[in-house]
Length: 234
Image 1 (cartoon, rainbow, N blue to C red):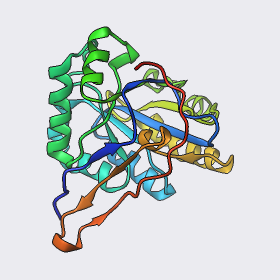
Image 2 (image 1 turned 60 degrees about the vertical axis):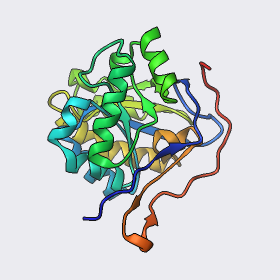
Image 3 (image 1 turned 135 degrees about the vertical axis):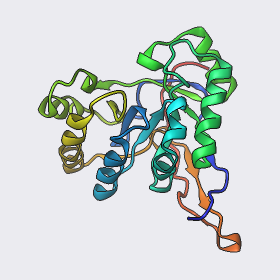
Image 4 (image 1 turned 90 degrees about the vertical axis):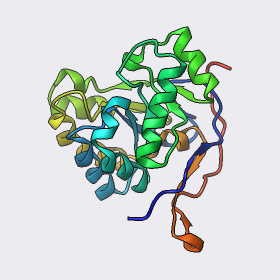
């Protein structure tokens, strides 16, 4: 396995977002509270369907799953910051520590932050802005954390519009229902003409990694063309 060069994302500015541009038929599937026992299953499903997603990681769990966290990036997905201990109102030190834990495992420095439970505080917003990170919420909630059944998760996850951000979970408990629903969700959205993309791509930015093969290092993710985005915040 080749080491990853330090990498990150660009083309996005600090602020709070609930969705992407309605002018492009992109949707972002997002997974919270990993890494965990179900994360690799989610990655395998995404790879089998040739789509990508964003994983908002809890920092304290990253050292237990370093190869899985690395696989998120090497398979073309994106890593985001979900605080060290899933703490509401996390400050600058917490977000920095989480970024460092993620970067140590994957070589990737996140530019996306999701506040636990979607609770926005002045402290967490200021910390994210100081680190030039986007605070990411959502506009489609599957409520999979309540274990409503795979059919209910499917129905909620497919109630999207162009630019939707879909909230799901790969950690924090039994996620077998989410895993069971995911192939159907992807098939449904693709059949309706949606592209399933990472958060950075949804927002018109780019990120890039490369495996360090000396002079043969190759970029894995070329930057896409940007498009306009409505956002809140500075």
